[in-house]
Amino acid sequence: WWRDVEPAPKDPILGVTEAFLADPSPNKVNVGVGAYRDDNGKPVVLECVREAERRIAGNLNMEYLPMGGSIKMVEETLKLAYGENSDLIKDKRIAAVQALSGTGACRLFADFQKRFSPDSQIYIPVPTWANHHNIWRDAHVPQNTFRYYHPGTKGLDFDSMMDDIKNAPNGSFFLLHACAHNPTGVDPSEEQWREISQQFKVKGHFAFFDMAYQGFASGDPERDARSIRIFLEDGHLIGCSQSYAKNMGLYGQRVGCLSVVCEDEKQAVAVKSQLQQLARPMYSNPPVHGALIVSIILSDPDLKKLWLKEVKGMADRIIGMRTALRENLEKLGSPLSWEHITNQIGMFCFSGMAPEQVDRLTKDYHIYMTRNGRVSMAGVTTGNVGYLANAIHEVTKS
Ligand code: LMR
Image 1: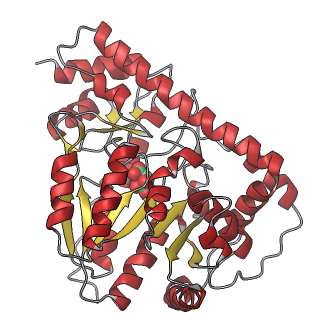
Image 2 (image 1 turned 120 degrees about the vertical axis):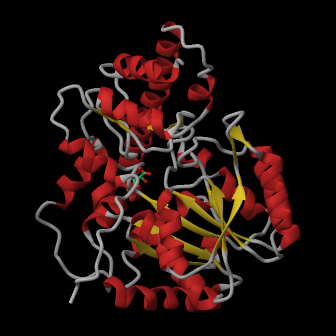
């Protein structure tokens, strides 16, 4: 039956974790996958999550959730993206379903796009999270790209981005990272978001926001939703993918949300029913445990406060490690500028290292990262930052 099946290529991100786990070296360092670690390099379960689990213990039945998932979880999640007092929420204009984290939300949207706008394509930033390409490819939506990052400045290539937005056919679909762009750590400023939103208006483009890192850019989820709020103020009908993998540390629970802003309540009911129809033959209905954790935390003011404090704690530790990595490289007398380490934000530093330099880091120093030179700052600790800086210096100095 399967004689012609060739092995699939390794995933550029999760393949790094596999290689790291297989390495017996005691010095090994994993700055590949975007998963938060504490200063001892250990995975973290947030205290608010522990408390929610204590409350669940013994009280959870294992019944199916509806096809659209937990209504309570979705309600609380929409407030984070659209605002506590959003008129869109009050007017029931948002079609929203629980999704299998950010990947599941993006995939559900891509399938929805294919079904209801079958001739459309999606404009994706260069670069982007590698899985975005897989998601829209498997949904059979043709892909186009727009310029985003400038390798020279290691910052935003705003002018080229605006040109590409202007030159795309009217009414195009664009994938935007709401905050803490992955992999570059480079976001537009508030002023630039306003200009982007205005240009989207002129062109009648549709913005789909992937918000996988809400809270990780500024330490404050409310502030990190600015890009989306600007689009909403301008009256855009957007789509949005949200995930609790990073900001609640619920990676393996696969809990997130897909939302689509509609013209009115009637349209929202129709769109939601179609999203559910897409989910039913794929996975029927989403898992219950993570959704319950999220609803308990966000609907209890004290637990929500604790969560916000813990998100800020994670973001602050990463910011501290940015400073430490840059300082260590500068102390070693690196001839290169490492300013971008502290300029970039969120979980990643797009170091500018070439794939061959990354290969040397792995081979000679047992340091694991994606070959595009992305460093997951969440994996950097007080204990390994000196070793990491030294290795980076060695492979980049000549
Ligand atoms: C990452 O970019 O490292 C994360 O989003 C994990 C993943 O699924 O790729």
